Length: 219
Image 1 (cartoon, one colour):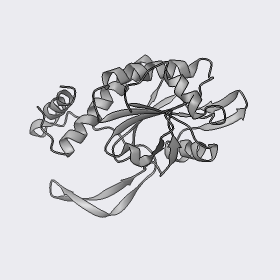
Image 2 (cartoon, one colour):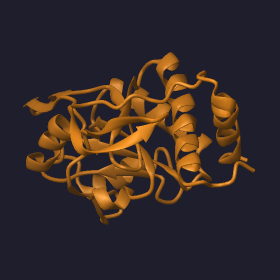
Image 3 (tube, helix red, strand yellow):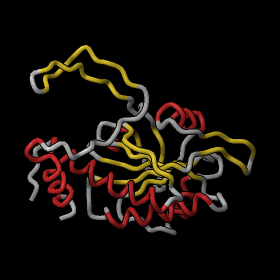
Image 4 (cartoon, helix red, strand yellow):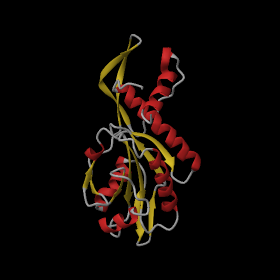
């Protein structure tokens, strides 16, 4: 039912050529490809959209996580650090609430990346994750080197991340929706109830896009 409902809604919105459905945007730099496709008899150049670069991090269980770990999965990424006094807690509580809606949906997972890997070791992340007790491999708490994390934030996810001093960091409060091709499809404030609701709706839209693209049944 979780998979079928958004697919059915997508079908209703796109049926009979009615232009009532607005697909999600693509964020980041883009360029025209040398290939093209036809639409209603017109030749339209294909577009190459920004994608996440290759990366290698470690999760709360000590497992190596790379961009390939998210192959064929939609995921929501965010940045945080475990000793953050306020904002991170609000963001992660909202992520935890979202996760409960997709606990049994294998297409969707979540990734929270620390901006303080010097303090946030695997052991620290493991202890921190127990506050939320995420089911299975649905929510990755990730650490690594700053030489990987900060460029990944800025050049991959296109958000700020840097250290000011031992207790102060610049990082984005955004939850970032990533499709199966590692393309950015939306940004949402992790502290805004309105944005969390919008993200939840747009995750369903993205699920529907994938179902339709792969010709999966809507029932």
